[in-house]
Amino acid sequence: MSASKPLIGISTYLERTRFGLWDVEAAVLYRGYLDCVVEAGGNPVMLPPVGTWNAETIGFLDGLVIAGGADIDPAAYGAERHEKTGEPSRARDDAEFALVDAALKLDLPVLGVCRGMQVLNVALGGTLHQHVEGHNEAPGVFGHTEIEVVQDTHLYTIIGPETTVQCHHHQSLDRVADGLRVTAKAPDGTVEAVELEGARFVVGVQSHPEQDIEDLRLFEALVEAARSKAS
Image (cartoon, rainbow, N blue to C red; front, side):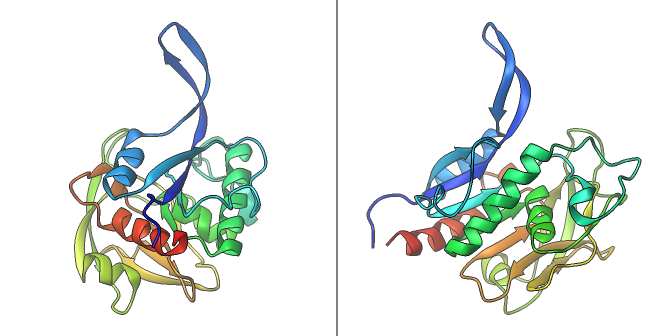
């Protein structure tokens, strides 16, 4: 087994950002992702939505996180844009679809967080509900949802039969892509987690585990899977 810490790539996004004397376009990411990867035993690597991402260019990674964020362009799953769907960012969509495709070809361990789970589903041919109520209390406020977890899944092994998760989303999985197994649901039936059957570790969660540095179970599972890849 390698003594080095696994390298965990994390997708980022481009935003107009102010820091110091500057007000510029920047690749940004909520720090919680970085802290969770570090505390779980990995080394984070930020991946911006520029350049070319494929199996060759991410081959140095041991694992991948597709981070949460804005809505996916509904054109990516053949739908018209709903009035409550946010302005699309095709650059980020394309970059993250490419990252998922490359990771699956390499059998990299993958964790998709909120939007990241939706990216995984759309990349594999699934669709989304463009608006659901009750999972987004207010801008910048995370709600809490009880979820029930299916037995004989990675998620069940990691967190057990049920738990409370933090959520902040207004879209959810509609048609689940072939090969993805639903592994958890909210009381209203919203899909809260999926995993790719036959893969070493490809897990998507609709919640935001990066918001709780005290509960690293998902990130620890990802890093452990990445460590076995790195060895």
